[in-house]
Image 1 (cartoon, rainbow, N blue to C red):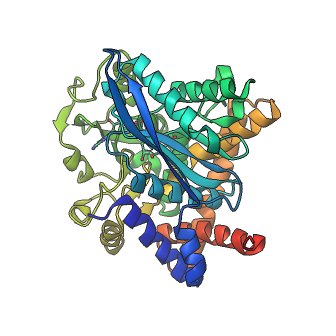
Image 2 (cartoon, rainbow, N blue to C red):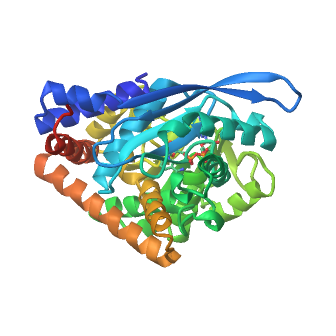
Length: 414
Ligand code: NAD
């Protein structure tokens, strides 16, 4: 199966071919600007010492400071972080916000740590990457395995080193310390807008569609809830423990409440049948929202996907081989850099509010997000139609094209 980095590089190649970019610039766009690998020593609660690996990659800085999440996951490695950082670059350019792309991560299973251990890992990792982050340099945010508490600890660690409070160093913080209204649900809300744009374009009424969501975390959980609240029928969701199905529809809000009150998986939720994560991807639904990890739709299972629309909440859930199969079947794939860009869009709004120390209402945030996402969808769809491209290649062409333009305009130093 193609790795995340192989996928990202192949997607870049497709865009470069359409744009007619020369080999030198192609190489520049394929190469991360900075990759930092750090040791993260952790004193466990039992007194033992463990040394974890951490990463921060800044893929491109040509359009502004770097921006991207921090992932805590046992399989995180440098190549995965490089791929995720590259996707962030194209995503920020595509939706027209003045950032380059970055990503970070620590190879650790956060569920295996106590809260105190998690705080120590976060603060030590933050202090190791302090030399390259900051509101003008690189602004982290939550990703898989991290949340607003993680961002609060990073913000506090950075501020302690600076000697004063620096709210703009991270986004996705709690509102009480400079976070933005609407950030918590922004990626999910954006997934819904992207989904509705695709359905509208195909003349499908969203109140008549069935949906399966893989990954019931920060993105998938609220995406399922918003889609349900808007009138869609969410028939299946899953997490790392497995998947659940109810053909009459689930109530995602009640399920989220069930998890918040202590359940550690969706599996076993009353009134649902258990199915496997693999079966969820192949359900006979109208819309599939992969919102967990990379590479879940690939050459081996893409032919069995029955959904007419795949709306990528996750980053890189479909490999290029899987993409080809879906395209041949006529499946509409709303690509990650478009479909999940609502998170970084509202992260941008948060950073702007922090820099101005002037905060917006939730309605203002949501309205601006909708405008940004619908404009990006329309740009991508218009280019795809005009040039006969898939939505993915069209999105990449716009993102990569804007970054290439920034390089050409700035020139090469020295
Ligand atoms: P999260 O840690 O909150 O949730 C991840 C979910 O996926 C959990 O429910 C987990 O149990 C589930 N999962 C993990 N492995 C799985 C597997 N093998 N099969 C099924 N489910 C599995 O993470 P998140 O922030 O929701 O991120 C999910 C995806 O969305 C990632 O690809 C991330 O990069 C992307 N993304 C996140 C944001 C954001 O704002 N958080 C923004 C853009 C994109």
